[in-house]
Image 1 (cartoon, rainbow, N blue to C red):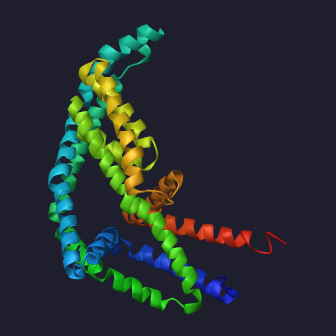
Image 2: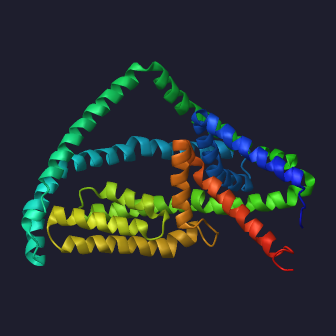
Length: 354
């Protein structure tokens, strides 16, 4: 079904898009909690719908899913985040020691093996610079905390965000289907078919990242962290979660994890055996991702190209900061779907096939 749009309507749509973008830019500081709530509601709505299908009421389903999401968030904030923070602190404290080991043990081995001049590689300057910047960072952190403590308005803002996100998420979860139905009824009837089709395609793209890929990333982070912990690696949680976080780009998570974990294992154990163990851990993780996680959680849904994901997140951060990072993937998904739609229209147009 083709829909013809007049030139006046095209200009009206363009003006509406520009005005909406400018309004989002102006309201970005206060829209962040609402956007987070909408994201959480979008993630949780399918689970609520499934519970409704097995004869639970909408309210009971929403309460159950909301409580589960709250438990997961609190578990991360109270358990996982402090552990990662502690590992980062220990890593920063040990960096000078690691640099000393590289200069006293690793560099002599490299120079002897490859015939390099030992004087050409000197890390003393890097160590001194790192120590100085680390002390400066501590001073900056202290001043920042002091400023936050002195700013009652900033504290009030963060508290309002913390309280606002759960409340808005609950109400959006409860009324999600109602909101979607009302928005659909506002679409002009002549454009409803095309609009609903495009929205469903956008949802298919977003589902992979928001409901599938994020779960795959988290699962890979857990697998890597547990595996490296079994190996005995000191910074297992930090390395494993980092590898899982960047695994939205195929093989990038494994490559980053292998490189960092191999260096860390060699510096900690000074043998080849533990490097082999690290490779086994990431081999198992990649096998589980390809055989179990991706087919189960993502399937054959069409997603964004990894390069498009990286570019959209970086562009969003550059244009709108943290708020831009949150809207980057939804905006990219919409743009990709619209480009596919216009591409199909172009192939069926008289301009392409005279």
